[in-house]
Length: 383
Image 1: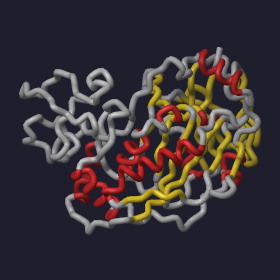
Image 2: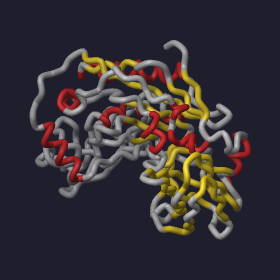
Image 3: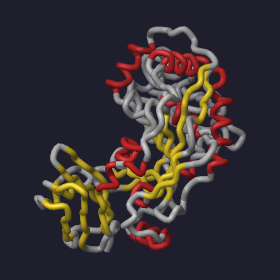
């Protein structure tokens, strides 16, 4: 692939992975004993309706089409924790095998982008896409491999996830992958399936699909050649890839799902194919909605990211935290994950120190306004 770009973000943060791991474990962020949720992609009812309007129009098959893909490998400040590049290219070969029937071949665009940043190595869903907003290669499917991906709900409960893919947004051509799930033979293909419009086989955002198939075109994943699915797991699928559950639908009909479908939550080693309906839908979506993708533009150099103009240290912190920018900061806010303002300042200077000792250990967000520009990110407060 030629020479690779290596950059480092947040050089004023902690650079020792061991210390960072201890800090994260102390506030419950270590994944060593955590089971990851398979996937955290679920389109809204509105988005499902919008995509249905596109997909009701059959496109001419675009066979043997190259889909540009760009890998971004995120590690800690000291370079520790990044995934092995050879392993993800091996995974890409499997992805291409699965997508061959759809006439789609994923080809890497340029060099891998290596990003060293402890702030993003533990990737908070949606919030940390500020990194992607500046590092994405233009009109390319960008795949970020990070040491861990997690989400936090309104009560500050943390859930670790294998990955997710924003759906239906032409300005967010990306998939986020947890390293631990990136080379298991099916999760990367699963998330790319979401990017190309596929829902989970057990999806219920459009209504629960009935076993008898009477609502298969409008409920579940809205495809009639994928049987109704009660949400599979390793507990209901044997090592021989046989469904062993006993769930029934609202008509009391027993489910008979397909444990080998890539868009299910079956055992990862069992998932190995897309149905003809799924293949047709992805091909149509690719032709109509994602045809703008192309490997014609180089990615933004991460050394030129706006985030370089803002230093935040120490992060994590036990007490004081310093915001230092190359531009004047008009306003600094620290909020909880629900957006409630906890601390506020109007420094009108390039440097502002704030005391977080009144906050409990946990994860918080910062918002910094500099003229018309607004920067956001996360903070970790430890005891």
